[in-house]
Image (spheres, rainbow, N blue to C red):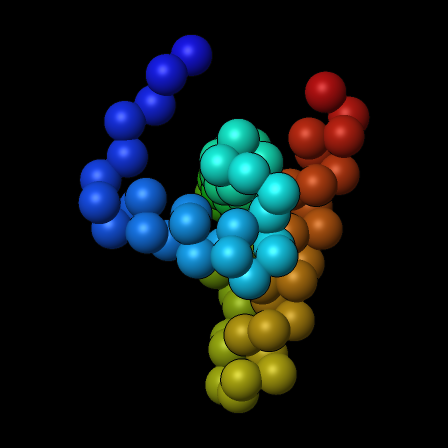
Length: 88
């Protein structure tokens, strides 16, 4: 496979190699793709959790009054989404 990078992307990859983060451009691109896959997985987990929440009538009763409440709510969504994906 051949990949055409923009000049900015090429410079970014070259910098990563110079700094010793990657041994070559192929490793840098593989790392970027791995990150993309992980973000997509997280996105799908979140969408699954949102779908599960939409089907739950008690979700209307939630009040998020603080940053801690919001963080706990999001944590619960992530856990349910991960559990739902693991069950597939």
